[in-house]
Length: 231
Image 1 (tube, rainbow, N blue to C red):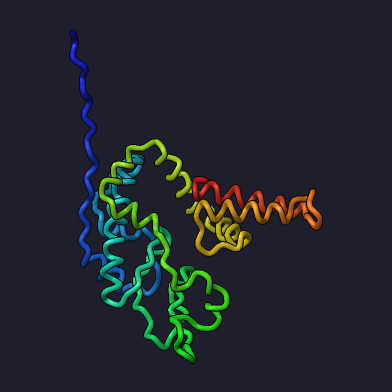
Image 2: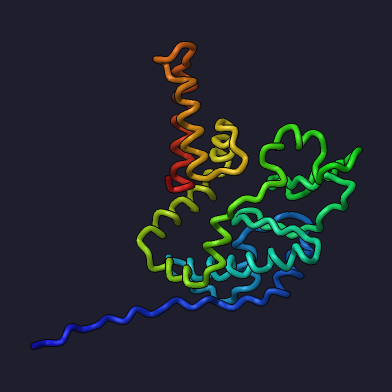
């Protein structure tokens, strides 16, 4: 009787980046930097193009460190914004100034707070009060903090995610307009789908007060969000 052959799958190793070097580099920047800038600065092996698995290994290793760095940054009174297109390490404002962070501009609001009842100014409390100062589950933190997930680089679904990342990079302007159309600040799959159904009920031509033009714009925006967030 022949023995069944057992195939061994090699694990992908996390690439070691120096936390202090990256902290010091980001602290010196006057504006957000892109992920590719960090890779060029700290990863000297240029032979990563054309290999999805290798690209993911480098990406995952870097973000694994960035999420660890985020914890250290908080202890040192810094805020680390993690976004492949806009990575920013910036000192947290004092208690007298608004600490609402604008990812597009890469800075805090810093408007002086007249009566210190919150970390935010009146404007941002009025517009974002339902989300400010609330604990939010961060699935990206959970994903990148678990070193076993680097083996996701072998997964077929990675191709879909990588395609979403490419769409994000190439069609960022369209993505920003789509998010503005949806009125979403912190998008995720559940929020996007819920908002789509709300707007569809509002704009569908068969509904009273519906608008065919707005319904078409909604579907175009939704398609862009689906491509980026892999819905």
